[in-house]
Amino acid sequence: MKKVSGPTIGRLSLYLRLLVELRDAGVSTVSSEELAGRSGTTAAQVRKDLSLFGTFGKRGLGYEVEELESRLRGILGLGRRWGVALVGAGRIGAALFGYENFRRQGFHIEAVFDADPSKVGEQWNGLEVQADERMEEVVSEAGIEIAVIAVPARSAQGVADRLVAAGVRGILNFAPTRLEVPSGV
Image (cartoon, rainbow, N blue to C red; front, top):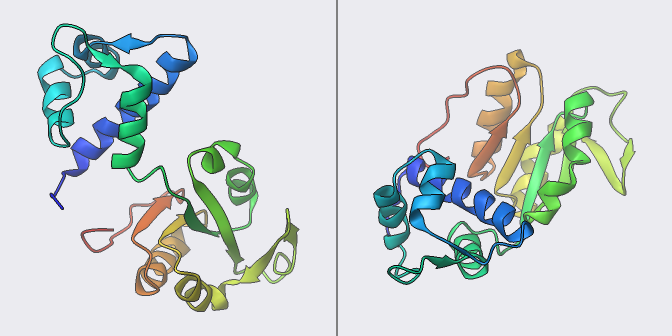
């Protein structure tokens, strides 16, 4: 499997969002120039990014929007179902839990944790908020690889360290602080 840079993955994600918008608007084909203009990059960069994963489109005709969308979903791993742990059952955590677009993109919150004993035991659409002491055990046993952190800044690094130790490989951080995690996370 080839190593792809973070910026390239970021651009591919942006191209995918743009393709979804184009598809929803009834557009069937798009050129690298149009994708470049909408994404703030160059047509050459779009072609280079896509060429890392094979041949796309037809010279002079552009890309079929639905086909390119489907292939980018596969490249980005969005064709599979991802289990997600949500850490923090406050207002931000509740809003993220209810965010329907996560599920549409294949991200399913399978466990919710909080340090506040008054929140532990609450039912969120059939999921019980669990004590954060159980986080490593549950995340590891369930094979959860992605986590969302929605805790106060002072707690975020410790939570991230524990999640990484439990096997999490991707973290979406909503705490107002920068996290230090190993490369590859």
